[in-house]
Length: 271
Image 1 (cartoon, rainbow, N blue to C red):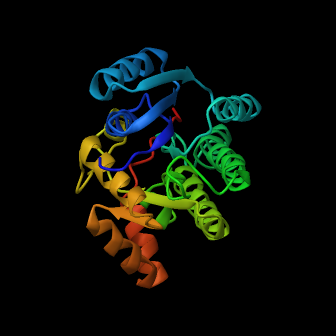
Image 2 (image 1 turned 180 degrees about the vertical axis):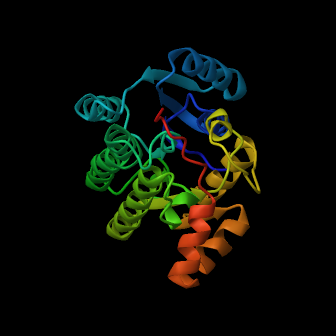
């Protein structure tokens, strides 16, 4: 990367995409702070980043289901060293159980909280902190203040077999767009990323075909390029941008039939 990033916070750094993002950011961050759920994988990512970039790296296990604790951790982190760039790469991907006809209430709650509520609340807190700082930043202007939300192409459509996942990502997309509009006068860029399939262990646990799948490294490169360009919305790979345009134009009965056809079969648990 050719642009100095200052203090970078990456949430979800213990996942494959988060690790790829961390390794790229390590090349030009003055301080890299990594949050994740998996302590062992987080420690490994932190060590890889130290070797790759020679930068200072902090790693913390943070549970986004405990929002009060996560907000306290964010405020403490920003008080110690103001955060210039944050990437919300954390998230849960899940579909309804094979024995359920629709998402279980506990799945609805968990996915909405981790995929939408927590990143929105943390993003709102950090955006206001960035906006309240003096106009002079580490590079003399506000170009170094970035907020990136990793959503999903699944947020473009009502997914009957992954309703909570799709809806939580759709909610995050609307929040990110609203935050971008509000923060632009303050010189803070907000980028929403809506990827298709990324080659991760979580993706492989979901049944069904995964067309146009890309590697985490390729995805990380595209995300950081969009962030540096202060792009409002990145959709990749490109066929998913086309799907976003075509799907709403289909007659509703055809669209509904198509989406139902993508669902894995429901297994009955009756005897």
